[in-house]
Amino acid sequence: MYLVRPGSVLARTAAEMLDRHADAGGTCPACGHVAPCPAFDAARAVADAVEPHHPRHALDPALSA
Image (cartoon, rainbow, N blue to C red; front, side, top):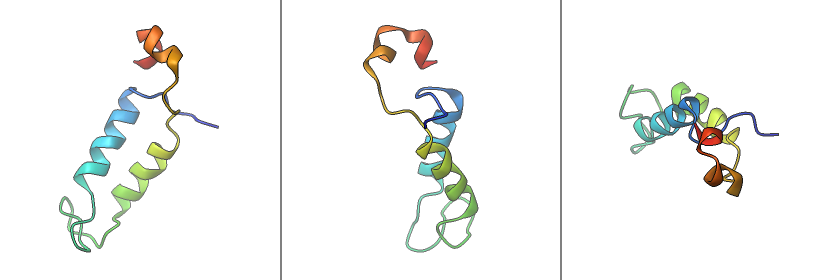
């Protein structure tokens, strides 16, 4: 079951967190923790809950916001 709509603020923020806290050779470049850091793990959990792209989202922009 997917709980987060693609394109939502939560989904976009999680994607930004994944980029910012990506593993850079064993250390998180954003916070300095051992990778994967807690922020990356939390963002990954949200990203895993994002509904895959569905054609109906392309037809109705209100569903993607």
